[in-house]
Image 1 (cartoon, rainbow, N blue to C red):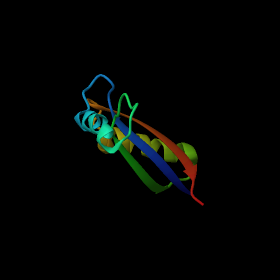
Image 2 (image 1 turned 120 degrees about the vertical axis):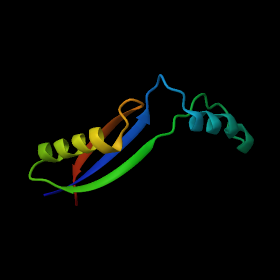
Image 3 (image 1 turned 180 degrees about the vertical axis):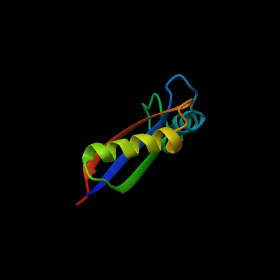
Length: 84
């Protein structure tokens, strides 16, 4: 069975996010006001084959922990859905 995983990897809230700070500071230059904070991370879309949704979850969890996220500096969340 095919599944699609939508994975978001973000820097820990305790860490500085220089990209996000730069974007937040420059939004007023393009006439966008009222933005207090911007955090920039990664969105990863993954299509995978697994017998069950639980097996797909385990594969994505392992990929995030071993490759996709730097657990010292980043957190991750993901959602699994059946591929159409």
